[in-house]
View 1 (cartoon, one colour):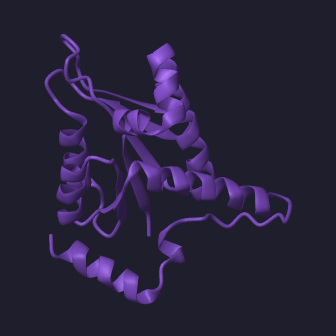
View 2: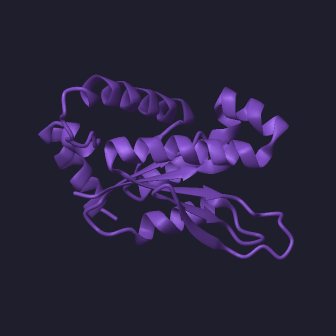
Length: 169
């Protein structure tokens, strides 16, 4: 089963202290650093990661998509929030997929959960990144190349519950 993780980019940058500090010095560098961190996570977990950045107040901004380090990066169009794009993506991704959304925006968490996605706060995403790095470091020398995906680590009851939630859409 394919796993997708959709990230509210600026929400995470503003929530992680190291990226927030970097943002105050160089906004673009903070974005690049987040993408680099997420690319590392993608390489370890094989999760399809999509990061969405607001261009809400960018005059004449058009929605753009690019792939950087295996990560799909989306900038919204003028007048559109990252939340709007995230909600649209949750509805468009393939049926039967495990879909997660990382944001600390409580209202957005409730909306995407209601649409069948699981939610991660910024802190939980940070912990997931750290755990993935520990996993990589632990198993790098053993030669084991099995992906560390969330779905394969769930017990059968949880998988069944998620499937029932997904089908209620």
